[in-house]
Amino acid sequence: MGVDYYNILKVNRSASDEDLKKAYRRLAMIWHPDKNPSNKKESEAKFKQISEAYDVLSDPQKRQIYDLYGEEALKSGQVPPPPSSARGGGSHSHQHPSPSFRFNPRDADDIYAELFGGSDSVGGGGTGRSRVYKDGFFRSSNWEYGNSASASASAAPRKALAVETSLPCSLEELYKGAKRKMKISRTIVDISGKPLIVEEILTIEIKPGWKKGTKITFPEKGNQEPGVIPADLIFVIDEKPDAVYVRDGNDLLVNHEISLLEALTGTTLELRTLNARDIMIPLTEVIKPGHEVVVPNEGMPISKEPRKKGNLRIKFDVRYPSRLTSEQKSELKRILGGSS
Image (cartoon, rainbow, N blue to C red):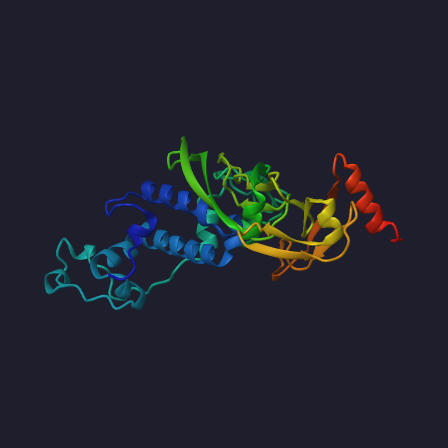
């Protein structure tokens, strides 16, 4: 049979006209391209498919041909002639589709305008009329009687205000990237118009280098109300404090204490990075309190340039001995006495 129009509308084969209208309205509310700005291509194709299914099943002659001979016969117009018993003018001859039938599909926008149109009529020559349509959307436009293009034009429906939720992330997650699954509960409206609470799992792909304040938007995942486009659900990245590192833009800062001896004679510093690598940093110069060593390309990943990273900046504090013996003082004077 090719395309299964009944399955597209989610109705059984005995569906009444009212069943078809309810199914179409429910699916059209979900898949109309204006309600899916971020996924126009798929929604347009789905919307046309839904409209075609309704067009065929709501038309008695199209539906009869489709049920008897399938989609190919319907669209090609190649309907088999009636059996010989029907040609003789018997009582059932009117039940057989006309062999001269030609498939003439209706425009998807026209179907939408018809089923979501207001119940009031437009008077001859009337202009400036406004309607509250059956889908709950308020539309206003100037039109003349019989001008279907103007009558179907509509303003964008009202959309609920976005809902923002903080998403705390560790510095390690923002360094390496991570996948978080968030369970949400929201209210939707079922086919009969009754509110229904459903649970859903949203997957958030945290990209390496994302910063505090980065927003991840899930379009129209808020509560659903009649006549109102559901709110966008927005997760806002927040940074949890790290035990070792502090973030400064794309750089990572770390404070490190060394002994006076290490500050004067040098040492090798070992650090564990946020992605669990051990890096060795040789200190060969005399380190003064507050001195900063910059290690290039060991900071945070740059989200817009994944192959690049900021710098690692190590700020040093020098730990002085609490007391010195007389011998130590004398030895230091001997060693350092001539230094400038």
